[in-house]
Length: 488
Image: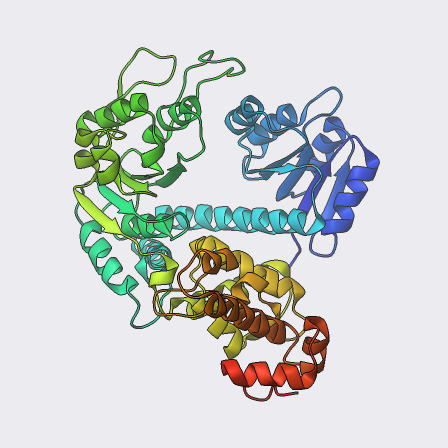
């Protein structure tokens, strides 16, 4: 018997918008449509709806008002707002009042809408499974408790250090050994590394390997946030603390009581926030924005820094007492360029995840392509690698993705023991004679062009303005050879 498809309710006062959403989702979901909050209320009463997509700006009842009512009557339904506006006050109100799962901004892309819908339906199912297991634990005593513990153990394992992908002899092995040792001691820990190296993943693994693993884990990236926004998210805020805040906001320090909070980007905190954070670390005390009472929390604080905090302390940009309070334990996560062998493992895994997410079947990345990816030094670390793999998936026409799909600046990067030079301008300002430096650039262009054209020498010669004899002479001169079975 086929499993029933999830039901999604689409609410928008513009019929063409409803039709567009339905077209994007109807292959995967059973779609109900409504052009007003009243009509949507009736459909909710008569149908088992898992997910709602609702436009914010509707005449009469707004999306937030409608979803606030849905939250009270059908709390398990996952609620999503579609809006052309992203004011911070509107977002805070929507999260507080309607319990919004996610915002989708206009104009949206069909693939984006479908990905959000799948995630929401999965969340609904996980919530139902959690409720079912909780009920079993109440009434089935030891049997249900054992089953629940097995589920929790599987969750911890899935979010623990076993989930940090790496090659067998990766430098990450030592990092994980250190982090695992610190995880079981209930002390503050500082995780240092360049943006995109995976500090959040290490922090999450430390939480799920600690004695607090049954309690909540939250994260907040302070980089790019205003001082007020950080205060609101971290400490909470009282109604009326600033314009547009019509209800109390619970901060992460309250939500993570007896759990773990990972505060990333602490190197960007203002002097005032550093003082407030020091009080949290030393006393477990804080004040909500706009409030006068002092609240306390028993939260384990893990922090992340993109830069060397010791240098910031020496320069007077970071408080020494806060640095020492945060760094009882310190874990340094290396950049991707310092993790030989890991790129191939990570790239293949990222490809299969992207393949599932976008519904495009592939079998993997070809060995020559993995060689180019390994030779690049990835200044953007995991995020840059993920973007590159996704781009290869989008443009790939075959089941195995070849090196011709790789971005040109990566193909031109010269492999070396110290890491690849990423751009031609690094050669222009480097050392060596004019002849040597020109030849180095020429060699990179030749390799990139031939790889991109799948080693079709006729096409490469035509593109570069060379004869086939001239091209072959240059290849022989520089010792550039094609991968096996690509000679044309």
